[in-house]
Amino acid sequence: MAGSLARINLYHATGIATLLVLPFLLDSIGMAFYVNMIFLALMYGIAALAWNLMMGYTGLFSLGHAVFFGVGSYTVAILALYYNVTPWVGLILAGVTAGLLGLVLSPPLLRLRSHWFTLATIALGEIFRLSFAHWDYVGGSSGLQMPISERRLYYLQFTGATIYSYIALGVLAVELIVLWRIVNSRIGFYLQTIREDELVAQTLGINTFKYKTIALAISAFFTGIAGGLYTVRFRYVDPFALFDLITISTYIAVAGIIGGIYTFLGPLIGSFIFIPVSEYVRANIVQAFPRIYGLHVTVLGVILLVISLFAPEGILGYLKKRREKR
Image (cartoon, rainbow, N blue to C red):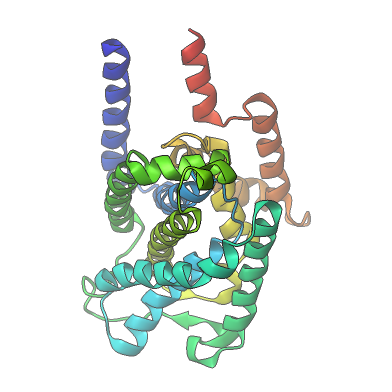
């Protein structure tokens, strides 16, 4: 037992050390594409961990997390562009805005169960996408451009993805601490009871609507911050990119599923597998066959199919299962 714990702690320490050194190292040798890949993996990892609080621990399969991602992203852009608020504050307010939205949406959404909940989240994403595309205050279909200023630190305006990767790493560290405390607390126990059987949870006296609302709000909060990170990195927001079913909602869910939804770190591991592969395919294979539309989605679908056939419990779940058998 002690040996297993020592190995796990060693793996964690190695992973943390690698993430701390790798962006700076890759940037120093001119591999900017791979630094940006790390940033994207961290950003999607933050969102996938938040999504997994809903799916892995509460049993609510959402394909509408692009709503919280997009709202958080727009919050940072609007505050900086219209009210001269630094993105340092904007990132926190992005999470707060998305979390409050989660609370507002919880009464109609959480009354639904099973596939009806999933379908409702998909519809919600489309509603927000079309609404923002016709809302002049947020730039309509043209979107919004972050302000360009000499106050680089104030507006988080840096060259390349290295600094943004470290900011995302800091957000990820805070999220891991918060989520770890939640899932190992009484709230986490209640959420898992709801996941296993909501009717039994109700007979045990658990207020299922209350705890599902808590899960939704926390999940929305961290997804909103992930959306804010998108804005400070790419400096531009538009509704068709941010409320997209495939590249936002589905990517977040697939990262969680590949890593293992019933494990704590699975979604993070999944994002560091899925996102680099996705970016590599998009940047290399698709460029070689430009006439084949949607080729990268097809390749990713094949990868997901293979993993679902050979490791239906996800990568981390599969490794855990093998370790238990040994």
